[in-house]
Image 1 (cartoon, rainbow, N blue to C red):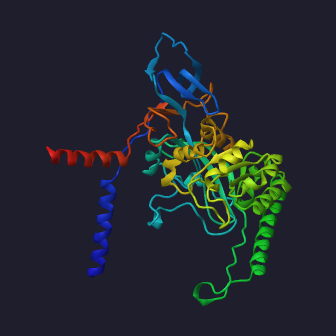
Image 2: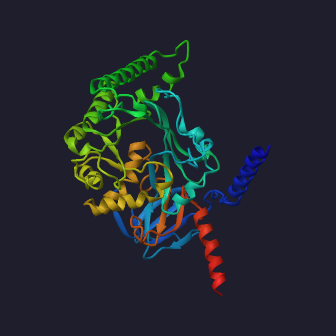
Image 3: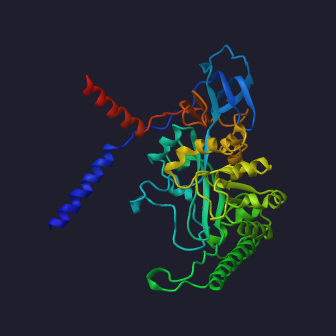
Length: 438
C-alpha cells in the first residue's frame, strides 16, 4: 500500500514539474501585410551573397530579392536591417525531431517500429508539434526538419516540416518525401567470447548472415516493384503499396551506408531498380568520389564532431569529409544524429568551413542542398523570388556560435515567436539572482 502511494506521489510530482516547465508559445498568424527588409547582407543559399539587399515578401512568398532595391511607397511594412545578415531557414536532415521528447521515458519515443520491413510507416502522423525542442532550434535559425523513422531494414517514410505549427497537417511542407533503408552491415569480428560467455559467430557466419539480409531486401524490392506494375491489385498489400511512389520517382530513396564497400553495394542495388539513391552516413565516401560522381549521388554526411571509424584513419577525417566531397563537386548535406542537438547544426557547418569549405558552400549544405535532397528546392532552401518566405535575421555570422544571434525569423511569411523554455528559465533565474544582489 505504501509502495503504491509512493509511486502515485512520484507520478504526480513529475506531472506537476512538466506542467511547470511548459513553454506556451502559439504558432504565428498568417502574414497579413507585405513586408520589405532593407540594408542587410543576404546570403541566398545558392552560393550568392547580396550586399545591402532588399527582400520584399507577401502572402508567405518572396516577391523580389534585389541589391539596393526600391521599397514600394504603398502599404508596406519596412524593417531596417542595416549591418545584419539574412539567411534561408536551416533544414535538419534525417532527424527524429518531434518523434521523441525525453529519451529516458519510453512513452515519448515514437520513432521506431518492430520488424525489418516497415515501408508502410509514415513519420508525419506521429510528428509532435507540441514538442518543446523545436522552439530551441528556431532560436538558432533551424526552421525546417525531416522527421525520419528508424529501425529495421526498411524503416518507412520521412516528411519535411516547418517548425511552427498547430498540428502535423499545418507543419507539412512535403509528406512522404523519402523512404529510408539501412543497408545490412556485417558486424566486426573480435574473436573470443561475446556476451554471457557465448562464443561469437565466426567471420564467415557473420558475412553469411549479412548476405542473407541483403537477399531478403532484394526480394522485398523485387516483389514491391512487381506489385507496383500490377495496376489495381485484388488484395492490397500496405507495405508494397507504400513503395509505389519510390518506383515512380515521386519519393526519394535514402540508404544509410558508411563503408566504401557498402556504399557501392547500396548504389548498385538501387540502380537495379531504376532508382538513384541518396546515401546517408557516408563515412568513407571520400574514397570513392569518382564512382559517386558517375552515379550522381547526393550524400547526407554525419556531423564533423566525431571520431574516425577505424584505428588507422586520419583522426581529422570526420572534420574534412564534407569539405573533400563538396569541393569534388558532389551535392553534400550536413546532418546531426538525434533531435536535441539539432540546434548546433549551423555550428557544424561552421566547423566544416574551418577545414577548407567556402562559407557559402557550407551554408548550402544545410539549406539548398538539403532541400534538393528532399525534393522541396522549388519552394524552399534559398532566398529567391517565388519561394516561401522562410528565413531569419541574425546580428552576425549565423555559422559562428559567437555571433549567431537570431533577432527575427519568418516561416512562410509568418513572423514567428522566438521564445523558448531555455530563454524563460534563463530570465527567471537571472531575475532571481539580480534581485538578491540588490
